[in-house]
Length: 515
View 1: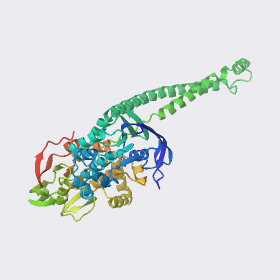
View 2 (view 1 turned 45 degrees about the horizontal axis):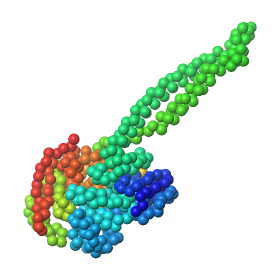
View 3 (view 1 turned 90 degrees about the vertical axis):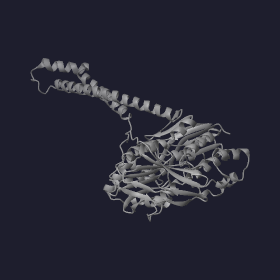
View 4 (view 1 turned 30 degrees about the vertical axis):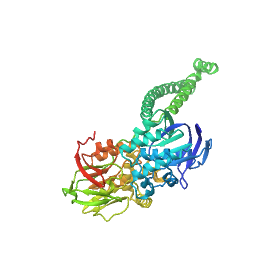
Protein backbone atom coordinates (compact mmCIF):
# COMPACT_ATOMS: atom_id res chain seq x y z
CA UNK A 1 0.00 0.00 0.00
CA UNK A 2 1.09 3.57 -0.68
CA UNK A 3 2.22 5.53 2.34
CA UNK A 4 1.51 9.12 1.30
CA UNK A 5 -1.11 11.16 -0.57
CA UNK A 6 -0.75 14.83 -1.42
CA UNK A 7 -3.51 17.24 -2.48
CA UNK A 8 -2.30 20.52 -3.98
CA UNK A 9 -4.33 23.67 -4.70
CA UNK A 10 -7.67 21.81 -4.86
CA UNK A 11 -10.56 23.96 -6.07
CA UNK A 12 -14.15 22.81 -6.51
CA UNK A 13 -17.62 24.30 -7.03
CA UNK A 14 -20.81 22.28 -7.28
CA UNK A 15 -22.28 22.20 -10.81
CA UNK A 16 -24.73 25.06 -11.23
CA UNK A 17 -23.44 26.92 -8.16
CA UNK A 18 -21.51 30.19 -8.15
CA UNK A 19 -20.05 29.34 -4.72
CA UNK A 20 -16.58 27.78 -4.60
CA UNK A 21 -16.77 25.21 -1.80
CA UNK A 22 -13.02 24.46 -1.94
CA UNK A 23 -10.53 27.15 -2.90
CA UNK A 24 -6.85 26.25 -3.17
CA UNK A 25 -6.88 23.56 -0.46
CA UNK A 26 -3.60 21.76 0.33
CA UNK A 27 -3.37 18.65 2.48
CA UNK A 28 -1.11 15.64 3.00
CA UNK A 29 -2.19 12.23 4.27
CA UNK A 30 -0.09 9.32 5.46
CA UNK A 31 -0.89 5.77 6.58
CA UNK A 32 -3.24 5.80 9.53
CA UNK A 33 -6.37 7.83 10.12
CA UNK A 34 -6.79 11.55 9.48
CA UNK A 35 -9.92 13.18 10.85
CA UNK A 36 -11.78 15.93 8.99
CA UNK A 37 -13.88 18.30 11.09
CA UNK A 38 -15.76 21.55 10.56
CA UNK A 39 -19.25 23.01 10.15
CA UNK A 40 -21.86 21.29 7.98
CA UNK A 41 -21.49 22.15 4.31
CA UNK A 42 -17.93 23.47 4.55
CA UNK A 43 -16.57 20.86 2.12
CA UNK A 44 -15.43 17.99 4.39
CA UNK A 45 -17.06 15.23 2.36
CA UNK A 46 -16.09 16.87 -0.92
CA UNK A 47 -12.36 16.99 -0.13
CA UNK A 48 -12.49 13.43 1.20
CA UNK A 49 -14.17 12.12 -1.95
CA UNK A 50 -11.63 13.95 -4.10
CA UNK A 51 -8.81 12.38 -2.05
CA UNK A 52 -10.02 8.84 -2.74
CA UNK A 53 -10.77 9.49 -6.42
CA UNK A 54 -14.55 9.35 -6.06
CA UNK A 55 -14.78 12.94 -7.37
CA UNK A 56 -12.55 15.10 -9.57
CA UNK A 57 -11.55 18.66 -8.61
CA UNK A 58 -12.11 21.62 -10.93
CA UNK A 59 -8.39 22.35 -10.58
CA UNK A 60 -5.43 21.12 -8.56
CA UNK A 61 -3.63 17.79 -8.31
CA UNK A 62 -3.96 14.57 -6.32
CA UNK A 63 -0.75 12.53 -6.27
CA UNK A 64 0.00 9.73 -6.55
CA UNK A 65 -2.98 8.30 -8.39
CA UNK A 66 -4.18 5.60 -6.00
CA UNK A 67 -7.36 3.53 -6.01
CA UNK A 68 -9.70 4.43 -3.15
CA UNK A 69 -13.09 3.62 -1.69
CA UNK A 70 -15.73 5.95 -0.29
CA UNK A 71 -18.13 4.73 2.43
CA UNK A 72 -20.96 7.30 2.42
CA UNK A 73 -23.07 8.96 5.11
CA UNK A 74 -26.35 7.62 3.75
CA UNK A 75 -26.90 4.14 5.25
CA UNK A 76 -29.42 3.18 2.56
CA UNK A 77 -26.60 3.16 -0.01
CA UNK A 78 -25.96 -0.55 -0.65
CA UNK A 79 -22.24 -1.38 -1.01
CA UNK A 80 -21.29 -2.51 -4.51
CA UNK A 81 -19.40 -5.54 -3.19
CA UNK A 82 -22.02 -6.53 -0.59
CA UNK A 83 -22.75 -9.92 -2.14
CA UNK A 84 -19.06 -10.72 -2.58
CA UNK A 85 -18.69 -10.08 1.14
CA UNK A 86 -21.76 -12.21 1.88
CA UNK A 87 -20.28 -15.12 -0.05
CA UNK A 88 -16.83 -14.85 1.52
CA UNK A 89 -16.23 -17.28 4.38
CA UNK A 90 -12.54 -16.52 4.80
CA UNK A 91 -11.24 -15.97 8.34
CA UNK A 92 -10.98 -12.24 7.65
CA UNK A 93 -14.61 -11.89 6.51
CA UNK A 94 -15.94 -14.08 9.32
CA UNK A 95 -13.94 -12.11 11.88
CA UNK A 96 -15.35 -8.85 10.54
CA UNK A 97 -18.93 -10.15 10.73
CA UNK A 98 -18.41 -11.52 14.23
CA UNK A 99 -16.85 -8.32 15.61
CA UNK A 100 -19.71 -6.18 14.29
CA UNK A 101 -22.46 -8.71 15.15
CA UNK A 102 -23.55 -9.18 11.54
CA UNK A 103 -25.63 -12.33 11.01
CA UNK A 104 -25.38 -14.06 7.64
CA UNK A 105 -29.06 -13.49 6.86
CA UNK A 106 -28.71 -9.73 7.35
CA UNK A 107 -26.47 -9.50 4.29
CA UNK A 108 -29.29 -10.83 2.08
CA UNK A 109 -32.01 -8.41 3.27
CA UNK A 110 -30.12 -5.14 3.35
CA UNK A 111 -33.07 -2.94 2.37
CA UNK A 112 -35.15 -4.32 5.25
CA UNK A 113 -32.62 -3.52 7.97
CA UNK A 114 -32.60 -0.57 10.34
CA UNK A 115 -30.30 2.36 9.54
CA UNK A 116 -27.90 1.27 12.29
CA UNK A 117 -27.68 -2.27 10.93
CA UNK A 118 -27.12 -0.95 7.41
CA UNK A 119 -24.40 1.39 8.62
CA UNK A 120 -22.32 -1.31 10.32
CA UNK A 121 -22.58 -3.50 7.21
CA UNK A 122 -21.37 -0.57 5.09
CA UNK A 123 -18.34 -0.14 7.34
CA UNK A 124 -17.64 -3.89 7.45
CA UNK A 125 -17.68 -4.24 3.65
CA UNK A 126 -15.45 -1.17 3.22
CA UNK A 127 -12.85 -2.45 5.70
CA UNK A 128 -13.01 -5.97 4.25
CA UNK A 129 -12.15 -4.57 0.78
CA UNK A 130 -8.83 -3.19 2.14
CA UNK A 131 -8.45 -0.33 -0.41
CA UNK A 132 -5.26 1.73 -0.48
CA UNK A 133 -7.27 4.80 0.50
CA UNK A 134 -10.46 4.49 2.55
CA UNK A 135 -12.82 7.38 3.28
CA UNK A 136 -15.42 6.64 5.95
CA UNK A 137 -18.10 9.32 6.27
CA UNK A 138 -19.91 9.45 9.65
CA UNK A 139 -19.47 5.72 10.45
CA UNK A 140 -21.13 5.90 13.87
CA UNK A 141 -24.37 7.55 12.76
CA UNK A 142 -27.37 5.43 13.80
CA UNK A 143 -25.37 2.76 15.64
CA UNK A 144 -25.69 1.92 19.34
CA UNK A 145 -22.94 2.34 21.97
CA UNK A 146 -21.61 -1.22 21.76
CA UNK A 147 -21.47 -1.09 17.97
CA UNK A 148 -19.58 2.23 18.13
CA UNK A 149 -16.85 0.54 20.16
CA UNK A 150 -16.65 -2.38 17.75
CA UNK A 151 -16.49 -0.08 14.71
CA UNK A 152 -13.65 1.81 16.37
CA UNK A 153 -11.73 -1.43 16.99
CA UNK A 154 -12.28 -2.64 13.42
CA UNK A 155 -11.17 0.68 11.91
CA UNK A 156 -8.06 0.74 14.11
CA UNK A 157 -6.85 -2.43 12.37
CA UNK A 158 -6.87 -0.77 8.91
CA UNK A 159 -3.33 -0.12 7.64
CA UNK A 160 -3.89 2.04 4.57
CA UNK A 161 -4.48 5.78 4.25
CA UNK A 162 -7.69 6.37 6.18
CA UNK A 163 -9.78 9.55 6.10
CA UNK A 164 -12.51 9.89 8.72
CA UNK A 165 -15.28 12.48 8.40
CA UNK A 166 -17.07 12.48 11.75
CA UNK A 167 -18.64 14.49 14.57
CA UNK A 168 -18.04 11.62 17.01
CA UNK A 169 -15.52 13.12 19.44
CA UNK A 170 -14.64 9.81 21.12
CA UNK A 171 -14.03 8.09 17.77
CA UNK A 172 -11.81 10.93 16.56
CA UNK A 173 -9.76 10.90 19.77
CA UNK A 174 -9.38 7.12 19.63
CA UNK A 175 -8.36 6.79 15.97
CA UNK A 176 -6.79 9.81 14.30
CA UNK A 177 -3.21 11.05 14.42
CA UNK A 178 -4.02 14.38 12.76
CA UNK A 179 -7.07 16.56 12.12
CA UNK A 180 -7.88 18.61 9.02
CA UNK A 181 -9.97 21.48 10.33
CA UNK A 182 -12.33 23.50 8.12
CA UNK A 183 -13.04 26.72 9.98
CA UNK A 184 -13.69 30.39 9.20
CA UNK A 185 -12.90 29.97 5.51
CA UNK A 186 -9.50 28.35 6.17
CA UNK A 187 -8.24 24.77 6.17
CA UNK A 188 -5.59 23.86 8.77
CA UNK A 189 -3.97 20.51 9.54
CA UNK A 190 -3.22 19.93 13.23
CA UNK A 191 -1.52 16.97 14.87
CA UNK A 192 -3.28 14.80 17.43
CA UNK A 193 -6.89 13.84 17.97
CA UNK A 194 -9.98 16.00 18.27
CA UNK A 195 -9.41 17.14 21.85
CA UNK A 196 -5.80 18.10 21.16
CA UNK A 197 -6.80 19.93 17.99
CA UNK A 198 -9.55 21.83 19.84
CA UNK A 199 -7.13 22.82 22.60
CA UNK A 200 -4.75 24.12 19.95
CA UNK A 201 -7.59 26.01 18.21
CA UNK A 202 -8.56 27.59 21.53
CA UNK A 203 -4.99 28.74 22.15
CA UNK A 204 -4.75 30.12 18.62
CA UNK A 205 -8.01 32.03 19.02
CA UNK A 206 -6.99 33.45 22.39
CA UNK A 207 -3.62 34.46 20.94
CA UNK A 208 -5.29 36.13 17.99
CA UNK A 209 -7.69 38.03 20.25
CA UNK A 210 -4.73 39.21 22.39
CA UNK A 211 -2.79 40.36 19.31
CA UNK A 212 -5.90 42.11 18.04
CA UNK A 213 -6.30 44.02 21.33
CA UNK A 214 -2.61 45.04 21.30
CA UNK A 215 -2.83 46.08 17.64
CA UNK A 216 -5.93 48.23 18.30
CA UNK A 217 -4.16 50.02 21.16
CA UNK A 218 -1.07 50.58 19.00
CA UNK A 219 -3.23 51.92 16.16
CA UNK A 220 -4.93 54.33 18.57
CA UNK A 221 -1.52 55.66 19.70
CA UNK A 222 -0.36 56.07 16.10
CA UNK A 223 -3.57 57.88 15.14
CA UNK A 224 -3.15 60.28 18.08
CA UNK A 225 0.43 60.96 17.04
CA UNK A 226 -0.71 61.33 13.44
CA UNK A 227 -3.19 64.06 14.42
CA UNK A 228 -0.51 65.86 16.50
CA UNK A 229 2.02 65.84 13.69
CA UNK A 230 -0.53 66.90 11.10
CA UNK A 231 -1.49 69.86 13.29
CA UNK A 232 2.20 70.81 13.61
CA UNK A 233 2.64 70.47 9.87
CA UNK A 234 -0.38 72.67 9.19
CA UNK A 235 0.89 75.23 11.73
CA UNK A 236 4.34 75.17 10.17
CA UNK A 237 2.87 75.60 6.74
CA UNK A 238 0.93 78.63 7.93
CA UNK A 239 4.05 80.13 9.49
CA UNK A 240 5.96 79.80 6.20
CA UNK A 241 3.44 81.90 4.31
CA UNK A 242 4.54 85.51 3.48
CA UNK A 243 1.04 86.68 2.63
CA UNK A 244 0.30 88.20 6.02
CA UNK A 245 3.74 89.81 6.45
CA UNK A 246 4.21 93.51 6.01
CA UNK A 247 5.96 94.13 2.72
CA UNK A 248 8.54 96.21 4.56
CA UNK A 249 9.30 93.40 7.14
CA UNK A 250 12.47 92.21 5.43
CA UNK A 251 13.84 90.33 8.46
CA UNK A 252 10.85 87.96 8.69
CA UNK A 253 10.84 87.46 4.95
CA UNK A 254 14.56 86.61 5.03
CA UNK A 255 14.03 84.02 7.84
CA UNK A 256 11.27 82.29 5.91
CA UNK A 257 13.41 82.31 2.77
CA UNK A 258 16.37 80.83 4.65
CA UNK A 259 14.15 78.04 6.04
CA UNK A 260 12.95 77.21 2.56
CA UNK A 261 16.48 77.11 1.15
CA UNK A 262 17.79 74.97 4.05
CA UNK A 263 14.88 72.52 3.82
CA UNK A 264 13.76 73.04 7.41
CA UNK A 265 10.43 74.40 6.26
CA UNK A 266 9.12 70.93 5.18
CA UNK A 267 10.40 68.89 8.11
CA UNK A 268 7.06 68.83 9.98
CA UNK A 269 5.21 67.88 6.81
CA UNK A 270 7.61 65.04 6.03
CA UNK A 271 7.24 63.69 9.58
CA UNK A 272 3.47 63.85 9.20
CA UNK A 273 3.64 62.00 5.88
CA UNK A 274 5.76 59.25 7.43
CA UNK A 275 3.24 58.88 10.26
CA UNK A 276 0.43 58.59 7.70
CA UNK A 277 2.26 55.62 6.16
CA UNK A 278 2.75 53.97 9.59
CA UNK A 279 -0.93 54.40 10.45
CA UNK A 280 -2.02 52.87 7.15
CA UNK A 281 0.32 49.92 7.66
CA UNK A 282 -1.09 49.36 11.18
CA UNK A 283 -4.65 49.48 9.84
CA UNK A 284 -3.87 46.89 7.18
CA UNK A 285 -2.19 44.64 9.74
CA UNK A 286 -5.22 44.88 12.06
CA UNK A 287 -7.62 44.09 9.22
CA UNK A 288 -5.95 40.69 8.76
CA UNK A 289 -6.57 39.77 12.42
CA UNK A 290 -10.15 38.67 11.99
CA UNK A 291 -11.67 36.71 14.84
CA UNK A 292 -14.65 34.85 13.41
CA UNK A 293 -17.99 35.47 15.07
CA UNK A 294 -19.29 32.60 17.17
CA UNK A 295 -22.96 31.71 17.00
CA UNK A 296 -23.66 30.22 20.40
CA UNK A 297 -27.21 31.42 20.98
CA UNK A 298 -30.06 28.98 21.38
CA UNK A 299 -32.48 28.20 18.59
CA UNK A 300 -35.58 30.33 19.00
CA UNK A 301 -38.50 28.21 20.19
CA UNK A 302 -41.86 29.97 20.13
CA UNK A 303 -43.82 27.08 21.60
CA UNK A 304 -46.24 26.35 24.45
CA UNK A 305 -47.49 23.07 25.90
CA UNK A 306 -50.77 21.65 24.70
CA UNK A 307 -53.75 22.47 26.92
CA UNK A 308 -54.44 18.74 27.01
CA UNK A 309 -52.54 17.09 29.83
CA UNK A 310 -52.12 13.78 27.94
CA UNK A 311 -50.67 14.36 24.47
CA UNK A 312 -50.13 10.74 23.39
CA UNK A 313 -51.34 7.43 24.73
CA UNK A 314 -51.12 3.81 23.67
CA UNK A 315 -53.11 0.80 24.74
CA UNK A 316 -51.54 -2.49 25.70
CA UNK A 317 -50.96 -4.55 22.58
CA UNK A 318 -48.47 -6.61 20.56
CA UNK A 319 -47.21 -5.33 17.21
CA UNK A 320 -44.89 -7.06 14.71
CA UNK A 321 -41.29 -5.83 14.62
CA UNK A 322 -39.12 -7.14 11.83
CA UNK A 323 -39.48 -10.57 10.25
CA UNK A 324 -39.72 -12.53 13.51
CA UNK A 325 -39.86 -10.32 16.63
CA UNK A 326 -42.85 -8.86 18.45
CA UNK A 327 -42.94 -5.54 20.30
CA UNK A 328 -44.92 -5.70 23.54
CA UNK A 329 -46.38 -2.21 23.90
CA UNK A 330 -47.70 -1.38 27.39
CA UNK A 331 -50.16 1.36 28.28
CA UNK A 332 -48.27 4.62 27.82
CA UNK A 333 -49.43 8.10 28.77
CA UNK A 334 -47.22 10.95 27.55
CA UNK A 335 -47.89 14.30 29.19
CA UNK A 336 -47.79 17.77 27.64
CA UNK A 337 -44.37 18.65 29.12
CA UNK A 338 -42.67 15.23 29.10
CA UNK A 339 -39.17 14.95 27.62
CA UNK A 340 -38.74 11.29 26.71
CA UNK A 341 -35.77 9.41 25.28
CA UNK A 342 -36.31 6.12 23.46
CA UNK A 343 -33.26 3.89 23.85
CA UNK A 344 -32.13 0.44 22.82
CA UNK A 345 -29.77 -1.45 20.55
CA UNK A 346 -29.94 -1.33 16.77
CA UNK A 347 -32.91 -3.14 15.24
CA UNK A 348 -34.78 -3.46 18.52
CA UNK A 349 -37.79 -1.48 17.28
CA UNK A 350 -37.31 2.16 18.37
CA UNK A 351 -38.48 3.63 15.06
CA UNK A 352 -41.33 1.07 14.99
CA UNK A 353 -42.50 2.36 18.37
CA UNK A 354 -42.36 5.96 17.10
CA UNK A 355 -44.47 5.10 14.06
CA UNK A 356 -46.95 3.33 16.31
CA UNK A 357 -47.23 6.37 18.59
CA UNK A 358 -47.91 8.61 15.58
CA UNK A 359 -50.21 6.13 13.84
CA UNK A 360 -53.16 8.54 14.05
CA UNK A 361 -51.35 10.84 11.67
CA UNK A 362 -52.09 10.51 7.97
CA UNK A 363 -48.67 12.02 7.18
CA UNK A 364 -46.03 9.99 5.39
CA UNK A 365 -42.41 10.69 4.66
CA UNK A 366 -39.33 11.59 6.67
CA UNK A 367 -40.13 15.24 7.41
CA UNK A 368 -43.44 16.87 8.25
CA UNK A 369 -45.30 19.18 10.61
CA UNK A 370 -49.03 18.63 11.01
CA UNK A 371 -51.91 18.19 13.43
CA UNK A 372 -52.00 14.71 15.01
CA UNK A 373 -55.19 14.22 16.98
CA UNK A 374 -55.32 17.94 17.66
CA UNK A 375 -51.62 18.22 18.62
CA UNK A 376 -49.33 20.29 16.37
CA UNK A 377 -46.51 17.79 15.74
CA UNK A 378 -43.06 18.14 14.17
CA UNK A 379 -41.49 14.89 12.97
CA UNK A 380 -37.99 14.55 11.53
CA UNK A 381 -36.86 11.02 10.66
CA UNK A 382 -33.41 9.47 10.75
CA UNK A 383 -32.75 10.18 7.08
CA UNK A 384 -34.56 12.83 5.05
CA UNK A 385 -35.52 11.32 1.69
CA UNK A 386 -34.60 13.04 -1.58
CA UNK A 387 -38.21 13.92 -2.48
CA UNK A 388 -38.94 15.26 1.02
CA UNK A 389 -35.71 17.28 0.91
CA UNK A 390 -36.58 18.81 -2.46
CA UNK A 391 -40.08 19.81 -1.35
CA UNK A 392 -38.77 21.21 1.90
CA UNK A 393 -36.05 23.37 0.31
CA UNK A 394 -38.57 24.72 -2.19
CA UNK A 395 -40.94 25.60 0.68
CA UNK A 396 -38.16 27.50 2.51
CA UNK A 397 -37.33 29.46 -0.63
CA UNK A 398 -41.03 30.37 -1.02
CA UNK A 399 -41.43 31.72 2.54
CA UNK A 400 -42.33 35.39 3.04
CA UNK A 401 -39.23 37.48 3.74
CA UNK A 402 -40.01 37.90 7.46
CA UNK A 403 -40.42 34.17 8.07
CA UNK A 404 -37.43 33.31 5.91
CA UNK A 405 -35.38 35.78 7.94
CA UNK A 406 -36.33 34.01 11.17
CA UNK A 407 -35.38 30.64 9.69
CA UNK A 408 -32.02 31.93 8.51
CA UNK A 409 -31.37 33.57 11.87
CA UNK A 410 -32.00 30.25 13.60
CA UNK A 411 -29.74 28.51 11.09
CA UNK A 412 -26.90 30.91 11.89
CA UNK A 413 -27.32 30.05 15.58
CA UNK A 414 -26.64 26.44 14.66
CA UNK A 415 -23.31 27.50 13.16
CA UNK A 416 -24.05 27.67 9.41
CA UNK A 417 -23.82 30.61 7.03
CA UNK A 418 -27.45 30.99 5.84
CA UNK A 419 -26.55 32.82 2.64
CA UNK A 420 -24.18 30.07 1.56
CA UNK A 421 -26.60 27.27 2.48
CA UNK A 422 -29.38 28.60 0.26
CA UNK A 423 -27.01 29.19 -2.68
CA UNK A 424 -25.46 25.73 -2.69
CA UNK A 425 -26.58 23.42 -5.45
CA UNK A 426 -26.21 20.46 -3.08
CA UNK A 427 -27.20 21.09 0.53
CA UNK A 428 -25.32 18.74 2.88
CA UNK A 429 -27.31 16.27 5.03
CA UNK A 430 -26.26 18.15 8.17
CA UNK A 431 -27.38 21.52 6.84
CA UNK A 432 -30.65 20.05 5.62
CA UNK A 433 -31.31 18.70 9.12
CA UNK A 434 -30.48 22.07 10.68
CA UNK A 435 -32.89 23.81 8.31
CA UNK A 436 -35.62 21.26 9.07
CA UNK A 437 -35.20 21.63 12.84
CA UNK A 438 -35.23 25.45 12.75
CA UNK A 439 -38.13 25.68 10.30
CA UNK A 440 -40.17 23.18 12.30
CA UNK A 441 -39.53 24.94 15.59
CA UNK A 442 -40.78 28.24 14.18
CA UNK A 443 -44.14 26.58 13.54
CA UNK A 444 -44.67 26.48 17.33
CA UNK A 445 -45.06 22.71 17.71
CA UNK A 446 -46.63 21.19 20.83
CA UNK A 447 -44.88 17.87 20.21
CA UNK A 448 -41.44 17.35 18.67
CA UNK A 449 -40.42 13.85 17.59
CA UNK A 450 -36.80 13.50 16.44
CA UNK A 451 -35.32 10.19 15.30
CA UNK A 452 -31.51 10.34 15.71
CA UNK A 453 -31.38 14.16 15.48
CA UNK A 454 -27.60 14.39 15.91
CA UNK A 455 -26.88 12.35 12.78
CA UNK A 456 -24.85 14.46 10.32
CA UNK A 457 -24.77 17.51 12.62
CA UNK A 458 -21.44 19.12 13.42
CA UNK A 459 -20.37 19.35 17.06
CA UNK A 460 -21.24 23.04 17.44
CA UNK A 461 -24.75 22.40 16.13
CA UNK A 462 -25.24 19.43 18.47
CA UNK A 463 -24.34 21.56 21.50
CA UNK A 464 -26.66 24.38 20.37
CA UNK A 465 -29.48 21.87 19.81
CA UNK A 466 -28.89 20.43 23.28
CA UNK A 467 -29.41 23.88 24.81
CA UNK A 468 -32.53 24.52 22.77
CA UNK A 469 -34.28 21.19 23.34
CA UNK A 470 -33.48 21.02 27.05
CA UNK A 471 -35.54 24.18 27.54
CA UNK A 472 -38.35 23.22 25.13
CA UNK A 473 -41.58 23.89 27.09
CA UNK A 474 -43.77 21.26 25.43
CA UNK A 475 -43.53 17.51 24.69
CA UNK A 476 -40.29 16.09 23.31
CA UNK A 477 -39.60 12.54 22.14
CA UNK A 478 -36.05 11.64 21.09
CA UNK A 479 -34.59 8.48 19.63
CA UNK A 480 -30.84 8.65 20.13
CA UNK A 481 -27.69 6.66 20.86
CA UNK A 482 -25.86 9.79 21.99
CA UNK A 483 -25.75 9.39 25.78
CA UNK A 484 -24.55 12.92 26.47
CA UNK A 485 -27.27 14.38 24.26
CA UNK A 486 -29.97 12.34 25.98
CA UNK A 487 -28.70 13.23 29.45
CA UNK A 488 -29.09 16.92 28.68
CA UNK A 489 -32.44 16.79 26.91
CA UNK A 490 -34.70 14.17 28.56
CA UNK A 491 -35.88 13.27 32.05
CA UNK A 492 -37.58 9.94 31.27
CA UNK A 493 -36.57 7.04 29.05
CA UNK A 494 -38.34 4.15 27.41
CA UNK A 495 -35.76 1.37 27.16
CA UNK A 496 -36.40 -1.37 24.60
CA UNK A 497 -34.85 -4.78 25.32
CA UNK A 498 -35.08 -7.97 23.27
CA UNK A 499 -35.15 -11.45 24.75
CA UNK A 500 -35.67 -14.12 22.10
CA UNK A 501 -38.35 -12.84 19.78
CA UNK A 502 -40.01 -10.63 22.41
CA UNK A 503 -39.18 -6.94 22.80
CA UNK A 504 -40.25 -5.29 26.04
CA UNK A 505 -40.43 -1.60 26.97
CA UNK A 506 -39.22 -0.54 30.40
CA UNK A 507 -39.56 2.96 31.83
CA UNK A 508 -36.84 4.80 33.74
CA UNK A 509 -36.68 8.35 35.06
CA UNK A 510 -33.56 10.50 35.23
CA UNK A 511 -32.77 13.96 36.52
CA UNK A 512 -32.62 16.23 33.49
CA UNK A 513 -29.26 17.96 33.21
CA UNK A 514 -29.47 21.00 30.99
CA UNK A 515 -26.47 22.79 32.42
